[in-house]
Figure (cartoon, rainbow, N blue to C red):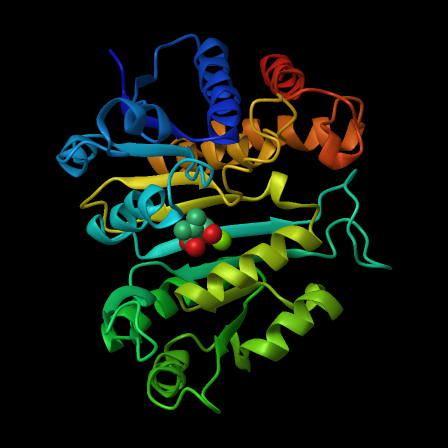
Length: 355
Ligand code: IPM
Ligand code: MG
């Protein structure tokens, strides 16, 4: 009998190509374990569905997804055909409706990879960006007045709640306690006087509960600079929704590129399904050419395995990825190679099956 039900939502662009490789690794895990573990249901939502129906998802798609143990997403966005605010809406809606308030974005410079930073060695960079994923700058509160006139006004209200800040900080502290015991929180309380001052105050009230973790706050501009200058200083970094979005792109880039960066959008209480997706987007410029790096997608599948309760399987997938990267024989053009998406996925699957 199948154990885990997973909704597979490849989406658009390279999302479709890299999801195929992530699914390949799930199937390889089943072969290795000699049992059926996943019941995968694929949805053609995104451009394909939009061409057929005029919407990117069906009206009741949240109820459909709710029944699954997890959602696996490739990438959304096809700006040549669909405005981004329409094609990306389901992603934000899923994160908020399913209260996936933790977005985990690990960034590790693994052996075999190169970084654009001078003088950094493998494993110098090993951090986890913990992004608040349910409110903040992405709350979607605001409006437009006097649309399309010279007097047009737009408001975009950030919502920062004490409950929302406290729960993400506690998650970050608990994670830091299991890692290198360092936590940095992004702020900008020198200018953003209400929301970010609340973040600072909640940090001061929560930090004493975790005496073993060394906590600091850092203004987002300085933190962005430090991610480039001294990434080795960072272990767990907690940030609001937008700050976390930006920091995770920097963290991914300095640790080898966004083609490698996975993410997990988690509802820790497991009241709703969690969603796993690569940090990168649909990359329309290279879509359909079979050259996208499948590693971010495969590592996102590993994060899903871990969350579903299969940490050993997750570890095996991550080890197969690490071995592929370290050997460097099969790599996609973003890593300086000439291999295709499929060849890299095959190489990782082969290594997994040999483990
Ligand atoms: C990400 C992406 C999304 C975000 C976009 C595609 C809406 O950049 O997951 O980091 O801003 O959250
Ligand atoms: Mg982003």
